[in-house]
Image (tube, rainbow, N blue to C red; front, top):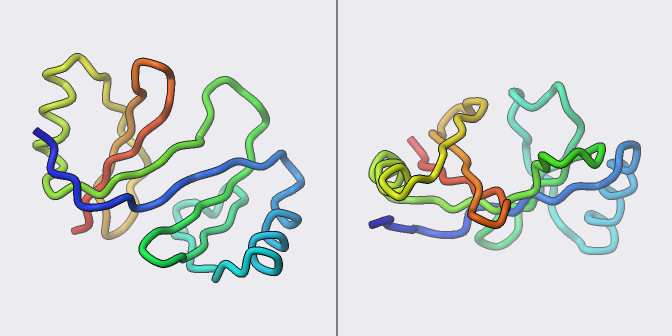
Length: 120
C-alpha cells in the first residue's frame, strides 16, 4: 500500500527557445511567484513557481517521445512505495538526486510519467 501525503508538483513543457516567454506569461499574466530551482538542474533551462500547496515546474523539450512532463506525489515512505510498485511489475527509474529529497519515477501502463518523492 502507498501512503500518499500530497501532490507536490506538476511539470509542463514548452518548446525550445520559449522558456523566457513562458516565464513572462506565468509571472505577469498568471501571477505565479518564482521559487529557487535546485542547482542540479542548471544544465537545462526552466523555471519553478510556488503556488498555494503545490509547485509548477516548467522546462523545455525537443518533442522526443521520452517526455519529462509528469506529476509528482509526496509519499510518507518512499521505500515502501517502491516495494509496492516493483511487486506489481512497475519498472522504477532512478533520477538525478535533489538535495533534501529522495525520489524516483516510473510510467503508468499508458506511458504517463509519475514521480514519487520523500523529503529527508
